[in-house]
Image (cartoon, rainbow, N blue to C red; front, side, top):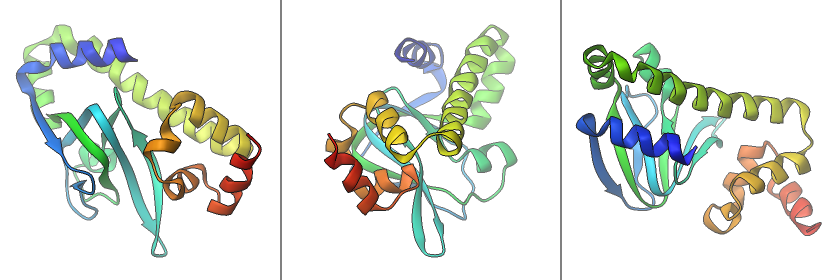
Length: 177
């Protein structure tokens, strides 16, 4: 994943913008249209939405991660997602419309775009399969294997929300270690 991420940054450099954000900033707010994809070089972001006034974490993006409001980017409509900065971060910002033009001018990079799309798709499949087939404990173990220091970097409430469990259940699971 790291190698693909670094190659994408190098190959897409002509259309990437570097930016930094402080903890607490919203990179995207629900009910707005977004065309930006964020490549996280350092720090932590999360994508979330609201259900009955409760915020639900859909995705974490730490170093070498990618996040965007896909429902907005692909469908060109207002998104239900918010993207929040959880730690001060450095990102490379890609405007999806610019990417489309760039790929038309550089068809040799289509393979890179496909590989990135496959990586993002596999993240989604893993998440869906985890929520469908794994126990809460197994989902937690999978998350901490993938992101070993996530519990020091992200609030336990966000982690519980991402795992689809209550903070109390997360506390019980963590107590077993």
